[in-house]
Image (cartoon, rainbow over the protein chains, first blue to last red):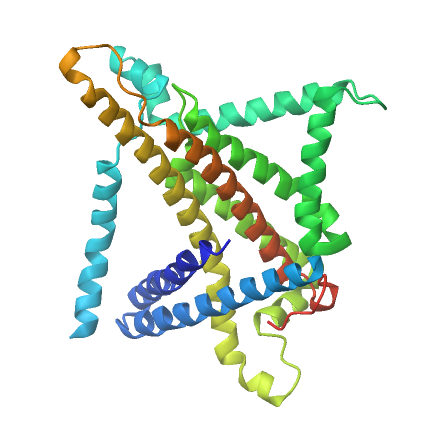
Length: 64
Length: 279
């Protein structure tokens, strides 16, 4: 399960970048949203990793 | 300046990734061989073009057959085959219900099917003449999009439309919570999109890597005996076939486990099995 963490951390900024590119392209405000969403993507991926680790710790604690 | 560098690097990343994927060779399957023998025949070209879909359907058909044979003559005292199927179903039930609790029972058919489908798709690549459909990003992306839609649908069904929006806003209950909404809402929406991307990339990368490794060692084994002009090589790939058995199973478990966790994160907080989570 731990091997999934780097992939989530990489996917966050990537999704933010793609979404930002798309929205920036539509509204012609390059590169602001791309930058903001790529950073937000990184924060979101860290948050998701924390959720997953917490869930797994809870599960292990219940097993013990 | 630094932003320009990042944009430049990102614009080159996709073609490089495509080139890298083209450079990775997998073992020939019987569709590839057929395509080389009968190139230009419309149905062979069609089959070659859609080979991942073809092998995915083959796996699905196999699972349906096993399900039909296993359930058509059920007995109170099960035979060996029924016993095997019941053990698998019980193990899957445990996997899901350990995380979701008693409420997880209704998610077992979806997650269980997903597990068996991915497991068989991963392992079929080890059989000579076959190909793992999961070594294509198209297959894994389709699976991840299915999970994404199912998780969103579960969120809407279990929380209701306002509960779902409340969840996306980070469940604000006080002034600080409401002030955090402009930050929490985009974060949660991004998080939902990260899930299918990370799920699909991880499965695709692992299975493609594993199949390419096997192909590389088959090539090395043949090259090692090339001086003798023999029609076979040293089976150097054998340890990696065993490794593929292990990684293929692990990847199927991880995909199903993550799906279960994503569903659990979408369920109403007080219903979580064990300590409630703050989102």
